[in-house]
Image (cartoon, rainbow, N blue to C red):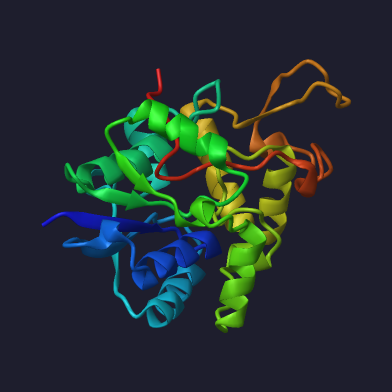
Length: 256
């Protein structure tokens, strides 16, 4: 049977996108099974399970897990297997194998994929379609002009509390300690999740790669690598001034 797969990330936008598809009379639904799938990652905040359960009640639909079993859905598992943490240009093997490759393994020809991309993220859509022109997508939020803020309001109106990472002031509901974050982000992780910070600091030393580096315009202008165990608590930008982290099942091309 042809399928519509709504990819749920435990965030407001993906939940609202799924809701719109379920309630739509769109002809694209005709004769298709609707699946809501969560790309499960071991290092996500455990509150995401609560978020999933709340959204299942709101949607009236079960959410299944899709994970890369080879690496047990673990960021550290991928890093240990491929022996590196992040490409110098920013790409990460955890995104590639745990999210993009997991989606590719699950999808079938003829599926329609629903992503919770909202107004302002059109460039991500263009990049995805350039990379994977054979994949059919349905983008209900962009089609209806819905913003990220409006998605958050819809969940608030439904009585659903935002995922813990948002409540702690993070801009994205990524893993606890995302390798794509900068120095300001990792100093926030050190304050909020010291065990996760120490775990990644040990991983850096084991694999010989520093996630962060100094930035042009800072006191350290040489762009040198900075290992987490030598990162000063006041080093880097304030977290709110860091660029957004993009990590999802439509992200990451080949890493070379």
